[in-house]
Image (cartoon, rainbow, N blue to C red):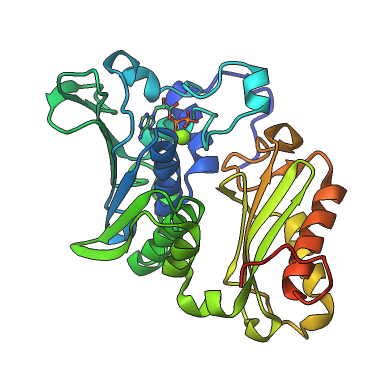
Length: 340
Ligand code: ADP
Ligand code: MG
C-alpha cells in the first residue's frame, strides 16, 4: 500500500515504538534467553538456571543469585533506555558489562507477558512486578532475580509465525546458554526443557568447562592458543586441520567475554589455516580475545553480535599469528602455547 499523499507526520504511540524496537532485539526465544542471562551475569550471579517450555515459546524463566534490583528501581528496569550500567558517553566507551543499552527488558515486555521477582541483600523480602499491569506485590525468594517471560509474540502474530518448531527453538536457546557457559566457566548453569534437565555445567576451570561444553573430542583434537600482543590477549583452542569439519558449526569467537560473529576475525583464523585446509573444510576453534575496551566499539548492532575494532589490521595480524603459532608448535620460539 503506497503512502497516501499529503498524509501528516505524527509521533507513534509509545507501545508501538517499543514493539518496533523489540523487533531488533527479540527475534526468537533464544534472544530472550541471551538477554536475560546477560543481565544475570552483569548482576554478578554465580548460578543461573534457565527453564523453558515449548522451546521457550510458551515460557522462559531465568533465575539468578545476583545482586537483585532495589524496589524503587523496579519500574525503571522496564523503561526503555533506562540502565544502571552506564551514565555517560565516557562510560559507554569503556563499558565492561554485557548490557548498557537499557533496552532488553522493555523490548521483551512489549512482545510477551513478563514478570520480575527480585530481592537485594538489603530487602526484607522479595517483590514481584507484573510488567503489563504494573502490579507490585510482596513475594518470597532469596537474594537475586527471577524473570519469567510467557507467550512470546502473543500480541504480534506476524512475528510468531516466523518461529520454528519447539525443538528448533529449544536448540537455539540452548546454544545461547552454551556460549555464555564457554565464556564464564566460573558460573554454574542449568537448562531445563519441559521437566527434563537438558544441560548442567558446574563452575569449573576454563579448560574443564570447554571440555564439558564442546566435548573431550574437540579438546583432544585441538591445540592451546595463548598469545599477548600489546593491548591484545588471545586464548582458547584451535582445532587441528585433520579435525576440520564439513560444517562451520564449531567456531566460537568471543571479544571481551561476548560472543561475536565477526568477518575480520573469522578471516584471520581462516588465513592461519590457509595451506592446511582443503576445499570447503571448516576449522573448529574457540577463541577468546581480550582487548582494551577503548579499542573496540561494541555499540554497532542492537544485539551486540558485531564489533568494530579501532585498529582492525593489528587485530587481524595478532589473531592470525596466534593461531598459526598454535598450529605449528615446533616452530622455534614462536609458540607460546605450552598448553598441550
Ligand atoms: P541493560 O542490561 O542494557 O542495562 P536491560 O533492559 O537488560 O538493560 O535491564 C535494565 C536494568 O535492569 C539493568 O540495567 C539492571 O539494572 C536491571 N536488571 C535487569 N536484569 C537484572 C538482573 N537479573 N539482576 C539485577 N538487575 C537486573
Ligand atoms: Mg540487559
